[in-house]
Image (cartoon, rainbow, N blue to C red; front, side, top):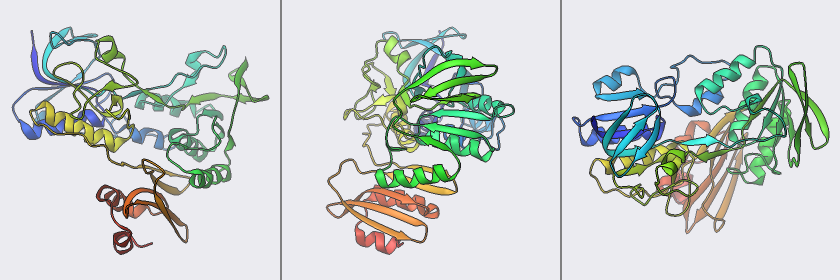
Length: 390
């Protein structure tokens, strides 16, 4: 039976980062990278930001094919259906089976299901993969009226793209605030204003959405008692860690795959990293740079190192409606806040014991990396004034 030194399941940033870390430790040992998508691994965060202009198949590729060859990485387009942890064995959908010495699970997350009474699931679109985004781009050729359910970051970014294409967009949210995971009420209100000014029909605090009937190619949807006609319905109601493979293989899971500080799972020789991992604190990070860091640590440890993953305040950023937002909220409310404004720029800096713990920022895009550095290094107010004056 074929034996691989390292196998990485999942072709997102966590998997890619793990491979780079392994190659820093060893140039010779075999690495198998598994993806169940139809293209070379790509930067997933780009796809819903490029619906208006479209994209080619490999526009957002993390690497080129030559990089795989130069680094002796085997990329396999297949799906793992079972992990036999007692034998260090993988069963594939098409390839058969093989054994691994070390395994890193970086399967990311999966869209939460949206259930609207009697509306067929195939009529509800998600934009989690490049292929799904391409499907939405194809709908724009004939669709004009869109319903987006969920006003988180993804829903707002998609709405922004559709408005650029002159589409009619209704954006609905069950909560009072938009992007409530990353914004405080003030920044949520700033975003709400931008959404409404763009021409989007924003409806918040929605209690009931029901499907009435189909009329030709349109669906009649009732939102809190008012009927609307839509050509296309998009769900952006959040994600759940993609634990099915691990759970079915008797690797201990809760909401995510349970890992320790070294990103080891309950199964020997098996690590988990990125959006699928649930940390000892119970946290599931769900952010690009957090997944990148975890993948790196998992790769290092799989290759023999003994690193610990320390959760740090990685940021969310988004550019919509010609404005740039940066968010890294503090882990708790026990902070002092300094609010500053200049022209169209606004920032709120959160300090505890004179050390920076969180940032909300609007329209200071050119210095976004400096804000991230300030967070990581926990700058003092004096350092902020010297290095990041507004």
